[in-house]
Figure 1: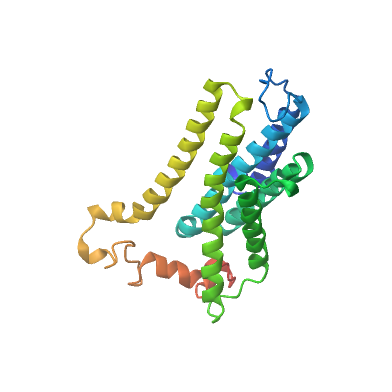
Figure 2: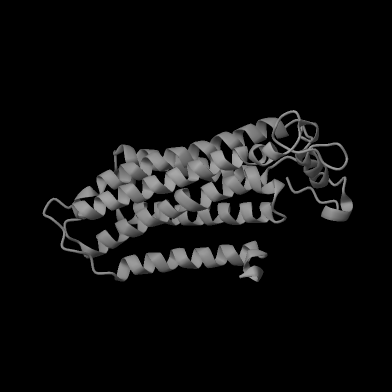
Amino acid sequence: MAVMMSNPLMMAILLLACCVAAVVEAQTTAPAPAPSVDPNEGNATSIGWYKAHGWLLWMAFGVFFPVGILLSRYGQYRLKWWFEMHIAFQVLGVITSTIGVAIAFKKFDALNDEMTHTKLGVAIMVLVWIQVLLSVIRPKRGQVSRVPWYFVHWLFGTASVLLAWFNIFKGLDLYVTSWTVGTQKDLYVLFSLNVAILAFAYLFLDRFNHLMNQSKERNVVHPNGQYPLGTAGKPMKDQHEDKLEGKYNSEVNGNNYV
């Protein structure tokens, strides 16, 4: 386990394998008899593809993308491999979401679908792939173009996840007739809990340093209340930025990670 935690690529491969296994399971599991109003008209194969589509998008926007965002925002101050892990989770999110949407286009004729869920899903995937393009043309820190690039990168990434959360609930609404009442309720509760945990993690990590600093005297805490002063009189955040920019070559070998 320690070896896997130190190798983000291995973790990414393992998580992707789990997603593929989930898709296979969705295709091989015999579904319960569908009611007469089922939009799939009792077609077992279609029901399996609907489940695969839903679970892939759930994993992408309920796990991979949000965890990647949290790693980027907070991991860089605590984790040595935060950037590699951020990339790994974002790549997993792109792969799983793209497969999920491809299923919709191939199996559900989404190109001719006028539902809000479908239109919003297409818009979200446009944002996702713009993010991929932005990652390729990322300016180096210190360049003037870095500011607008960072703003667009942050805006599109945040918007895609928040819109996807809303759209997943819309997807559950559309598929309501394919589940029993109990299962339907459980899925709503499960995804709501997923979102609540992510929201709590974001808020908790945002105030974590401030919480830890409550036991320290004011003269050893940075005035912004977020980061304790480092050994050189700088906040730990600023020292970390110096290291990322190559000023502490012995620790990062002169590489510019962000």
